[in-house]
Image (cartoon, rainbow, N blue to C red; front, side):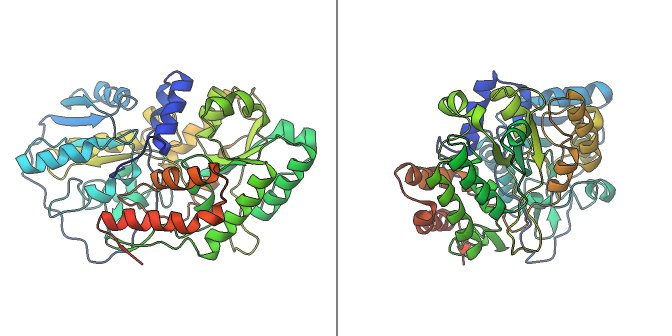
Length: 454
């Protein structure tokens, strides 16, 4: 994120997961920021004027260690393209390297990488700004319209500002309702379809099977799992550097009350799923867990070691009074093409390949944002035989259900939740008690970064 992310941030916790897993490369997702939808356009997009082009010139690509093999694979299949690969943090785990270096290059007037990957979904909020933004508006002739239309609905929302699209999305982390089918069948429970049914089941579990869990509220990304799905306006862009923050909205308070009741009864934990204690003592007692698509292989298989054939995924839940169900998103990296690139053709071709090619995306660790690649990726998941049922239809459905009212910003919702709400929960306060303090923390951070809050 582009602020002082505390060590308890979501990315820190997911890096803990990497340590638990022995640093598997598929956990490159361990670095994705929050946020999704498209801010309201406030002006007509300015025409993009590329610098003088030098066809065939070398392009410099910045990527994290998990993405470098993909760039190398592209290089092998495109031997005529000259590429210099630079491995960097990918802005993971609270790093702010890309923006810091770009500011230096802006001052020097040279040095910008032609292509850059960022695991921080919020990076587009600064890369799209300024008289000459670092990121090129890819919708203005840099990437084909047919390619842009191939991404999941809303996937390019974090890349879109004032009518222009400044990046391509690498992957999605749409939330679904994970459940242990073996345990659900054993206990005679039906999978809920509404949050009200989820709450009722949680109360039943607490009474009939104490110690079993249907959720956690102690993860830094809990806001994206629960409050985003509830359509809570914790940070809705209303214009350029303008956000609405209203945690007293009924769509915030209803989720806070629901979680409070289940925390009190013990069927929703205040711990994080990646803590050593949770993994040792509670992992085998997870009955249900709303969470991102990457939970399947990363959390249940590699971390919790849940045996094959037990875990399944159901559609995101809705409140009974809502017309449709929405969900949140916990991750998803970005690819930028530099507005300063002297070889936009090569830069855009590489970025397009990295985000859309089955040769790379079909075997990646996380759910591709490009719809055709996602189909191939899901076929690979099915072949693993790990899940109790085919997760493909639910993943595809959820990818189109991410609520567009939770906006990409220069501040981290996870960092604020970690430093404000989680300590309050652990001290015995309820989520409902903490909504005012949480709102003040979001508002103060937003204002400190130049946002107008309404």
